[in-house]
Image (cartoon, rainbow over all chains, first blue to last red; front, side, top):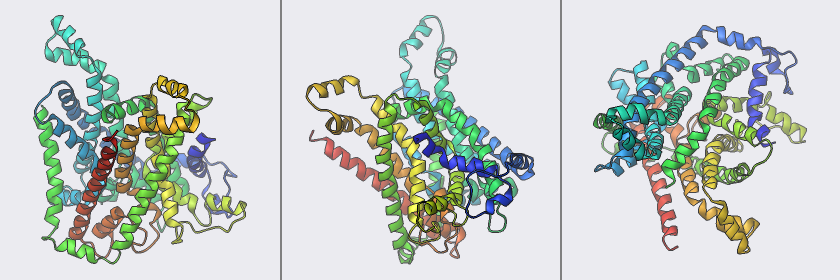
Length: 259
Length: 268
């Protein structure tokens, strides 16, 4: 029952995606299509616009995820292992960055990139995505690193393993689930990002999926069937990825925040 | 490597803020902001939007989390179902609800008609558009909140309940006096993060309110966006002033909430 209630809207999405266009405009509406039209998915996949949005989304999400991990892993490791002056302030700063969602700052961001001449560049989009996902990644990773007992490193040192060696051969493999979690989370956040892309990418040919698909339904053309087919294609992989990291995500969240 | 990281972060933070400041001319923009006719309505909308969405979400999530904490057939399925609205892009979910709410072709009116009521233009009617948006807001906030509360519930050891039972507390009393106090840290996290997320939420109001002219159903965030990029005003300075106000409001709400909770904790 409960599962059905949560999934019902998405079932409507899927079923609408499977209807021929003529069937969208029947009143009263029907839940199930009379004629099933899985070809809608092919239409979308073969649409050059869709292919371009998909490429942009994949590239932006992938590059910003790599950037996030490269910056977050050392920062998280350091804060988890060492006490240094300003450590508390640093962690608080990380939390505050998390609060300033891009939405609240979007006007400032637009000004910034406008002055840098970076409107309509992937650089801008990737930088914003990476910057805003960094905080969350540091937060989650720190919890993972902190949960690895120090004795493992000491044991490695006894066995003649240098500090760098211990980091790469012992700590990183043990923390791998955490790194994967932070990575997937950053990827999904970038994949679903809407407002920054809407604002910075004014050139229609450079837009990612979230902004691009809305052009299937405008005041002039209303391809709800294609919009939903595209949405289903975009959502399914993300849901699978999300399901993979779900157990770690909640653990990481509460380990960081519930003291 | 670490100072470099902090440098990057600090520079990013400062850039955004100077971006905001460059847009303002002294305090003139703030004064003009107060003169905006739409401001009272927008502020009212924002308060209603944040308060109702967060409150309803927390209450429903408490129930959901409690349910998911018990073992029952199909629990795995519910947890999976709960992931979908969380993982799905907000803009896609919003578009989906625009379609479901549609006057002629939406399924909601079909259900309403079947129940014997007159169909409504959910997103076009001043009386229903806010409620329609709030419903979507709650729907997408539920998964995250439920997961945080569920994690909180799982940290409560079973012995505590046994002790409560020995002392003669059961059912509601056990829940009220044992579960809720122990759940407080998780509740705090869930509430604060929801306050921030819901206040900052853009795609839902932006998409569902798309058809309506003016600012009658905007929140502070979409109002700011319209001032900056869409309306006849196209005034970045004014929007930036509103942006600063927004950020301060979030900070204020969060700090106030933390204060209240700490104040309540201390006497115990």
